Length: 138
Image (tube, rainbow, N blue to C red; front, side):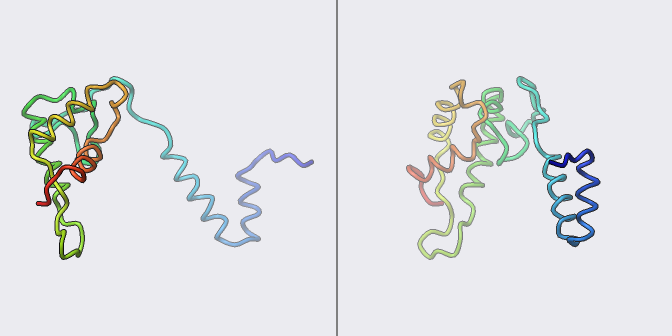
């Protein structure tokens, strides 16, 4: 049974005979492998702006919600409402996504985010799923 001592050299040597497709696959897999893992440490606070709890409506988490001030939470609710209430397609009956009133949204996020297991939950997912059940189309 042969043993490969230099896997990259072996793949590159074999790629010459098989064409650029194998080389492209190798380069793509190397690029994907570079994105694996996590760059943030547990308990590390992400810098917050004065307008919302996080950096982006798609990346804001329950942990950030819990650490945010009331003003930051209000800004986040505005962003979530704009995101969820944006146009959803070409449907004649539903032009924009359903939204929640701020009081109900605040109660839902406070309820879920207060639980330790929900630290990494995305706020937009909690908001849009709740709005689908109880929201009103904007």
